Image 1 (tube, rainbow, N blue to C red):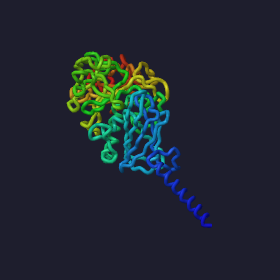
Image 2 (tube, one colour):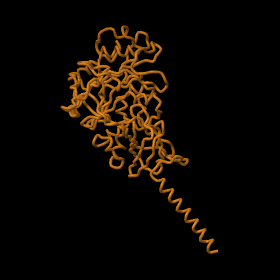
Image 3 (cartoon, rainbow, N blue to C red):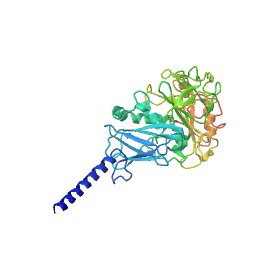
Amino acid sequence: MNNCRRQVTLAVFLIMVAVLFSSCVGTGSSSSNPPAGSTLVSGVVVDNGPALTNATVVINDSLGAQKTTTTATDGSYSIDVSSLTAPFVLTATGNVGSTAVTLWSVEDVVTASTTNTVNITPWTTAIAAALSSTGKAQDLNAMANKQTILSDLTQVDAYTKTLLAPTLVEAGYTATQGPIETAFTANGTGYDSIYANLAVGTTATNAVFMADLTATPCGTGETTNCVAYSDPGTQTVTDPNICGSDIASGAPILCDSNLAPTAAPPSWPQITMSQAYTFGCVGCIFWGNADNFSQTPTQTPLTLTGITPTSGGSGGGGGGGGGTGGPYYWDNWTCGSSSQCASLMGGYTGSTGPMCTLSDCTAWGNKFIPGGYSCSTTPIYTESTGTPANGVCAQNGVDFRQKLKKSARTLD
């Protein structure tokens, strides 16, 4: 009898140890089969197009708790955050080929008992950098920067979406579908196509810049369909043609991609240097801690080429259009800080249209505000329209063949 009791007692003890051991092992990692009603954070990890396979994803919450998982072959991940407290800062570490990359993301609030999308990409890394007190994404901390994340994330997200609105539209999204919470797959379309064509870099003063990855270097005086950088803080006597570093890998970004790092780049008199960041560029957008993210950006929004929309087909930058049957295009223009331009255009920003084709949109922009406009299928700024001859959309040589009279905001 005593032997039987000892066996029962031993069995109970072993069961308790097994339960305790399994619960300890499970703490700090994502569950492959979370219970019903769990709060999940899921998303995709990509760099310049390719998904990060088997990357390590770490999520840190505002109380110092942490969970870890790895990405699947398609770059997707999922973590049960039911026991964590937002806001969150996420880090993904992996490889693209033989190149090591690290990406960041951030989320202020999540909805309980459902799946919340939080992607981790170069664009989300740029947002994380803007929320950091140093301008570096790696310094953003969910505990120390909790209030900043809660108060400023929405503004920073909106600011960057405005600067990339034409690209979002070309990719098949609305201008409000941002990089953090918009679900997508790494299949070469939509957001994945954006990242395959988007260069994201950092400067010596921790500003972030974005440009078309496939754009050719600018010639002297050239301002459209090209890219050029100037960053005296990064350029050295040894490597005068290095103007920044890739935000994910740290690889050097060349001032002129046609030249070696040791070659002296052109002077590019068309570049206006930013005093706040001692950085300037043509064909790019940039921001940093000196910017007021509650205001509308004055830079010309970036339109990437070679974009494949989520619905299929090809977008971005090429020819054609739909005549009077659509799609129609809008010239989204900005004068920056030029009061002379604003006086001529009737305001500092505006969206003029609709234009019948992309070529009509380009013709209008090149005629009235060269280098200060972008074309998209939706207006970004306050709309300004006229009365097209066909009653539907404006055409070059018909609606704006005459010289500008009073204001370029109208189509006369």
